[in-house]
Length: 471
Ligand SMILES: Nc1ncnc2c1ncn2[C@@H]1O[C@H](COP(=O)(O)OP(=O)(O)OP(=O)(O)O)[C@@H](O)[C@H]1O
Ligand SMILES: [Mg+2]
Image (cartoon, rainbow, N blue to C red):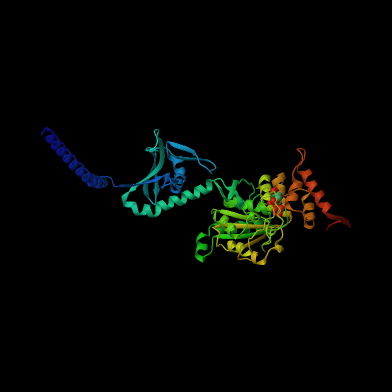
C-alpha cells in the first residue's frame, strides 16, 4: 500500500514538471521575440538613430572584409587629424603605418551636410569553446556607423558607396606595388601553389628621368592619363578596358625603362609574362585570369619568345633591371626547349580582351619587322612607340641626370653634331657619362663621351669646316 502511494506521488510530481517544461518551451518561443520587438519599438521611439556594423572578419570562413579595410583607409585621414586616441597598424602590402581609431574612440564625418558618427570597438568571443579545455579568446574588430534614421536612404545608397570607393583609391595609393613573374605550370599544383610569384616593385625610372623627345613623352603621358579616366567610355563602347602598346627599338634604347616609368606614373603593378614558360592557350588564360586590375602586363622580346606558329625558339633570357639574376636563371632552366602550343589566335584573343581583365599590356621587341602583322595591327596594339638611338635632346636629359649639367656647356655643340651621325643608344651614352672614379668631373665624362662618339664616325676637316661621317 505504502509502495502504491509513493508511486502515485512521483507520478503527480513528474506530471507537474512535464507541464512546466511544456509551458516554458512555449513561452520561450514567443516571449523573447515579442519582448525584443517591444524593446526595439520603445528604443526607436526615444532613440532615432540607426547603427551599422562593419566587422573586420566576416562570412562563414571569416575572411578579411574588404569593406572594413576600405573604411579603415577612408577614416585614416580624419582619424589622424581629429581623433584623440589612435592605433597604429602595420598592414601587409602597405608602404606605411596605418593609423586608425582606437577602441571606443569616435569621430564625426559630414557627407552632403549630414552628420555621421564613426566609432571603433572590438567584439571578443570564445574560440573552440566546445572542444578545448583552454578556450582562446577571439577578437573581431568592427567599425560602427551611427546616423539619424531620416537619412537612411541617402546613407545606404550614396554614403556607403562613397566611402568604399574612396577607401579603395587610398589603398591603391598606399600599397606597395609588385612585380609579378609567372611560375612554370609544373609548379602550379600542391600546397600553397601559385601561378605568379612577386617581389616589391621599386624601379626608380620616371618620365622625368626618361631620355626621350619631350613631345613624344608628353603624348604618351596624355594617352595614359586618358586611358586611366576612360572606364565609362570603354564600357559604353563595349570594349575591355585595356590598352596595348608596342615598344620597339634596338637593345638599350629604354623599352624596359619606359615600362617602369609608365608603371610608376600610373601607380600600377607589373606582370612580366614570360611566354616561353607557358605551354598552351589554356595556361595562358589561367595566368591572365589571375592578374589583378590596375596592372601592366609585359611580354618582353615578343619576337624572341615564340614564333607563334607552334614552335618554340631558342630562348634568350635577359637580365633586366627589374629582374634578379636568380629569377632569370630559374626561368631559363624551366624552359629546356619544351614545345609550346600557344597559338597566334590564343594570343590574339587575349589582346582583344576576351580573357584579359582591365589593365594595360605592353610588348617590347627589338625587331618589329619580325612580328606577324595580325598581331600588331592598331586594334590590338593601340599605340606603337619607337625607342630610338640617342638624339641631342635625350642626351641633354641624361647629362642632367648623370652629371647635374644644365643646357650650356662648351662641348654641347660638338656632341650635337656627333649624335646626328653616330648611332649610340641611350644606355651607351649613359654609360660614358657615368663617373668612373671619384676624380671624374662633368668635363672628364663629357670628353669620354665625345671620344667614344668620334670613334664611331669619320671626322675630317674640310677648309676649316668639321665634316662627320658615320663609320
Ligand atoms: N631612354 C632612356 N632614358 C634613360 N635611361 C635609359 C634610356 N635608355 C636606356 N637607358 C639606360 O640604359 C639601361 C638599359 O635600358 P633598357 O633596359 O630600358 O633598354 P631596353 O630597350 O629594354 O633593352 P633590351 O632590348 O635589351 O631589353 C637602363 O638601365 C637605363 O639606365
Ligand atoms: Mg628590355
